[in-house]
Image 1: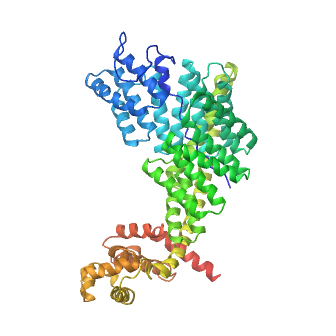
Image 2: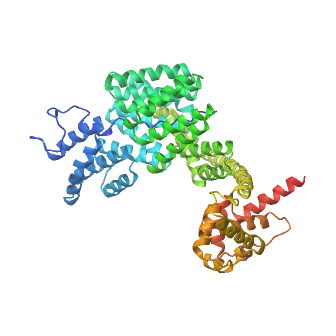
Image 3: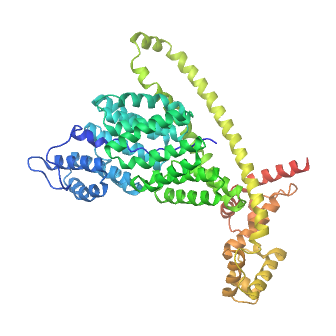
Length: 570
């Protein structure tokens, strides 16, 4: 089973560049927003922001900076708006508050950031890159911003920020389980051996090496780099890294089969997760769940996966949700819960096979190639460049041909994958249909009275024998009159014995009827006529209800069903 580690590295704070990466005198004691004597108000805030980011006091940062930001907006003070706006975006990003990050980014968007100093541009590109990765699930955009951070840091001589940018790029390789990022991790680690590198940057470089070595199954090397990272954490008191390092160590121990020690490290990672960002907490739950599933403790795995999903949904973090939904679907299928297995497979497939995701993956591959060659192209000789220009036309034509071939191959692979997904969804629905026939119609809840059971039985006979669900004006009131009862008794009976609302109950019969008709090779009724015959007021409503229930469009379901009939006959 492939390890799917996720590293939510917190970059070395780029705002350090704003104040020349120096410790300011006279800032000991209580941290507040007061203006220091002998300095401008903006200079005082620079020192304050630097101190907040170093210590992780983002609550103080937002409370004190908010009035200064809006005052700067009113005064049209471009420099102050950019500094305070980027600082607020970074503070909210650390707490994974998507809406607040977007709000402050939109407020500073009209201002010219290209002419701002390096500190502002570094911080802004870091915020945009991390936001793209965590909340937009956009790998190419994220790596593009991190590359800008690296280039700008290199131009300005900001060594620690160069390491941070490279570490975040390695993180993206790691998310994709692509060990090709080892070259970049080695470059970051090499930079961290410089005497000017601080302990935070060194720690990040060690973690990057541990990530890449784990993807190559070099477990001894993983242990070595994690030990180095741990020494920097202990020396500098970077408590936010304890949970991440513990998680990586737990995964390493699990891979080595040392399950007892692995469990201890997973528990340690959870115990320290409150000092890390929410993304790392969700990642710990996911990895711990995978470990529990490996041991056969499915109940524990289910609980951990649900905790991971809760954190992911609450903070709108998408960077690993695809893997989480795949794990949950497989777990429920393994434990015999076909309905839940189908639901989570639908969620998983929406990430797996969407056109947007395929485009991002293809674009990301191009960016990775560009990144790997970034340093090499910089030092090419002029004679080689001249030769490349001579061959430009030939290479351009060849590149177009290769791209056409790649596009055709990608389209074919996508088509094959979609066909496979359609077949799996069809089989999932057929299995869940059998489960529903056995369980749903027999009642999910305890029968509360014989009267409810008798009333529900009469209602079922009307639905199954007379198929009154085909009536477009069917309502609970109308059905109550046919059964000579009132809507309250009928609603209670349906809710109690089917576990569904009245409308969901009626819709279940309609979709079951639709799938039966669509599964008949000799019945070629048009979809529009089928929707009308089943009682739907419009084809679009039918399509939406059918796809929600089965995961497929009616046309695609018909093709899969007919293919299944032919296969069964053979």
